[in-house]
Length: 457
Ligand code: UD1
Ligand code: CA
Image (cartoon, rainbow, N blue to C red; front, side, top):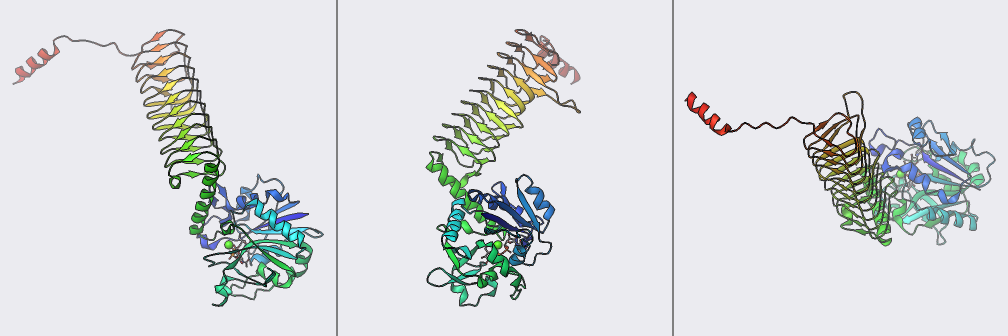
């Protein structure tokens, strides 16, 4: 039996933020959510978040986490004090307790599995994750005997100059035999520079306590300030990009590209420089995405090109060419083999197969059929100042350059709309619609103009 407790009550003073530290976002998900997620392979029987600073805000942010319990630490008197708050809640619990600081978002689930395994095999009172850091500043230092049995943990602030030479650090991730921990928790003192109850002091009272080194020390990077947050983002990005390159995706100039870990890519897709893929996005194989594009929460089919464009909350089917300079937003669906852009904005619209909206258009709140040619500069006037209205354009229709559709309006199939028309009434199938002033010709205008000029002089 395993219970997981995440320490998330601290303010995170070093972030210099009004937002609780654990709610700061790392690649689209909060530090706390990432830490929680790293426990997924353990199938914990109970999951508890210890909250305090802006507790309501933290709870609200985690509302969707099913079965997560909250324990309040009303005053934040240290990590040991935080764990003390569990005593009434875990009364009678006989299993192991995994304690994680809420600010270690890069842990791999497999690492925690290994920690728990070693803890159980050796029947330790406590087992903790450690690492040898090139720059251990800010971390507690772990002192062990030759067999990785921990003798002492000393916080950076409390270290002597000699103790600071020890680069083996405490990752802030511990497995405890809960019953043994529960017995000694009330004994913690606040006898240190910060006058806080340190969880690390508990280690001194337990036996045996074992240190387990992580293979990749970057995993236990703790986030205390904005610089570490930015560094963690880089670590995460390197991981994500390495993964997709190994899976058959080409990244051109990877350093200029960012990819959220929620994104799914398929092989033989090429991501060009300055491209950002975010949220719940999936991109099919054989695509060319970028340069200079942002795609978020969107599904892109196979063999699509997206160049210098922004696509959000949209579906784009196979074989489309998007951009340069297209903006798709708010529930857009583009059928197969369409051309969208240059300089086209499409909002909340469904577009059929093989339709082109190729130059300088705004299409909003519209349904457009198959094989439609939307002429350059076509606009759907969807807003009457109060409400949005719908435009429907049937399959096979051609709209002339600079036509305006004043919604609500329905255009049939195989219609031709003359250039420069302002269409305010429905048009039946196969008709020609012209809605513009007839052209006037005044013959000999040049001479008339010159004569008028001479008279004045
Ligand atoms: C802690 C460890 C240190 C370790 C480091 C790893 C202690 C005393 N020190 O230091 O040995 O190397 O983590 O990252 O544990 N929190 C509460 N309530 C509190 C205080 C803190 O819930 O009263 C939470 C914070 O929200 C945070 C976590 O505990 O998520 C760690 O607190 P933090 O102040 O960042 O500890 P460190 O100084 O980094
Ligand atoms: Ca920390």
